[in-house]
Image 1 (tube, rainbow, N blue to C red):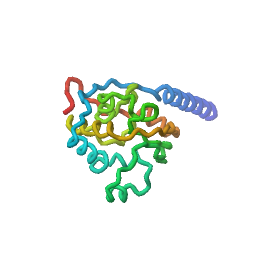
Image 2: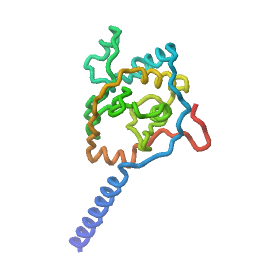
Image 3: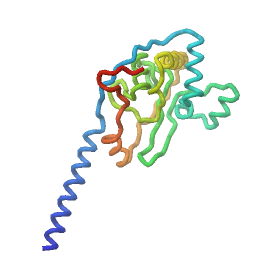
Image 4: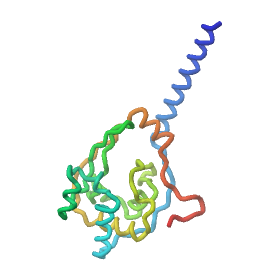
Length: 192
């Protein structure tokens, strides 16, 4: 009798594990519908300088999207680090590689519209509808700050730098399937 209970328990456990594994793999590319903020890059030097400050200083984008080792030293000396991404970040969820934020059309954000960039920053949703990893700090930015950031990014020198794909562990794939959600506005409410 005990042997029968153990056999059935093991069988149920294996079916549950297989079900979770299949569900995890099927949910790797979930898409979300997020609005596109009405943002258009500006050539206003004051706005571009504000965007530069947001990206390099106040929101710390350069800390992740630059492969420069001593980023704080570069910033303190007035340098402007490349934002070509590909910085490797090892986590229990897998190996993450940061995005190329330069306007390179092949490997960066050059093909994205201003509104697509703003949507990633505000809602965490990529052009293809998939959620980005939740490390960015753009959700609370006003339209003016988003415009400043996009305007600054458009002034960067394009850098061709093919960023490797993320390498998720099973824990990372599970989190991506069931935990990762973009910051979407409540139905019927506008953001900022």
